[in-house]
Image (tube, rainbow, N blue to C red; front, side):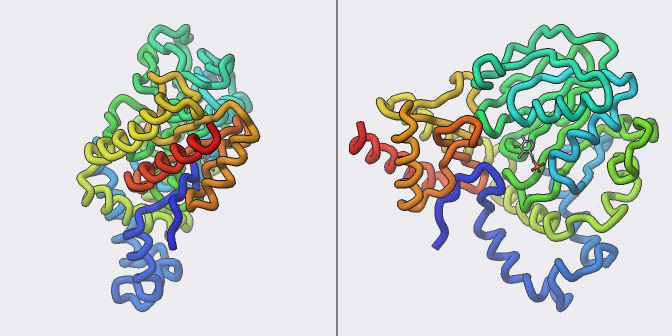
Amino acid sequence: MRVYNFSAGPAVLPEEVLKEAADEMLDYNGTGMSVMEMSHRSKAYDDIIKTAEKDLREIMNIPDNYKVLFLQGGASQQFAAVPMNLMKNKKAAYIVTGQWAKKAFQEAKIYGEAIKVASSEDKTFSYIPDCSDLDIPDDVDYVYICENNTIYGTKFHTLPNTKGHTLVADVSSCFLSEPVDVTKYGVIYGGVQKNVGPAGLVISIIREDLITDDVLPGTPTMLKWKTQADNDSLYNTPNCYAIYICGKVFKWIKKMGGLEAMKVHNEKKAKILYDFLDRSKLFKGTVRPEDRSIMNVPFITGNEELDAKFVKESKAAGFENLKGHRTVGGMRASIYNAMPIEGVEKLVEFMKKFEAENG
Ligand SMILES: *Cc1c(COP(=O)(O)O)cnc(C)c1O
C-alpha cells in the first residue's frame, strides 16, 4: 500500500510514472535492456534525452535563446557553478531568505564579493523581504534568489527588482508547479528531487549569452556551463535514469494540462490546508500569509510535545514525513505536483480529529 508522502524531498512522484518505469524495467521499448544498462550514446537514449528536453521546453515555454542543461551534483553544485560562470566582476548580490539561499551566498563568497542585499533572517525566514528597491551596486554580475524556500515555506510571489541585472533563481522546490516567464531570468535551476524526479540531477536553464569561456580561473571543466552546453549535457555520462524519469514526468504534466493546470491543482490543495490552519485553534501556519508557498506548508501547535505526538500519530495513520525541518521544528507538509487533493483532504480530516482530541 502507498502512503501519503509529504516529504520535502526526495518526494512523491506520480504513481503512473512509477508504474510505467516498472513495466519498462527489464525491456525498454524493445531494446531488451533497462535504461540503466544502456549506453548514453545509443540511439534509444538519444531519443530519451532529446524528447525530455523538447517536452520541458514546451511545458515551460522556454525561448530558443536559452539552453537546457541536465547536470549532476544536485542544486548544491550550482551554488558554486553560478559564481564560477558568472562572476566577471567578482561581485554578486544575494537575497537571503532561508538556508538554501544562505548556503549559496556562503559558497559565492569563496569566489568573489557576495553582498547580502536583503534578508529575512531576523524573523526566522518567515517572510519575503520587500525587494522592490534594493540597494544593488551597479557592477554586480547578477542578483540571486531562492524562489521557493523549502524549509520555511515562503515564496517570492513578485520577483525582485534587479535594477537591470541578471536574475539567477534556485527553483528546486517550485519547479514546474506553475507557469513561469523564463525571459525574466538569466539562470533558472532546480534539483529535480522536489517536484520532478529522482535525486542527483539538476536542470539549469541558462540564457545563451551567459554561457561563455570567460569563467573564473580554476573552474573545473565539468562545472563550466559551456562544456555541458557544447555537448548537449553528454560531455560525460549523465544521470541517465533520472533524466528518463523526468522525461516521463514532463509527459505526465502535459497530459494533466500543463503548468496552468498544475497551478490550479496546487493552489486548490494549498487553500484546503491554509484555510484549515487559519481557522484552527490548535494549529497555526508559521509564514506571513502573503508570502506563503503553495508547495511547502510549515505549521506548529506551539507546544513541542504536542508537535511530536502529532508527527507520531500521523505516521501511524499513513501520513509520512510531516516532521518539520530539524532547524525549525514543528511540522511541514510538502504538497508537490504529485500529491493528490485527496491526500490533503485526508490530512486535514486527521488534523481536525487530532485537534478535537488534544484541544
Ligand atoms: C533541496 C534543495 C536544495 C539542495 O538540493 P540538492 O540537490 O540536495 O543539492 C537546494 N535548494 C533548494 C531550494 C532546495 O529545496
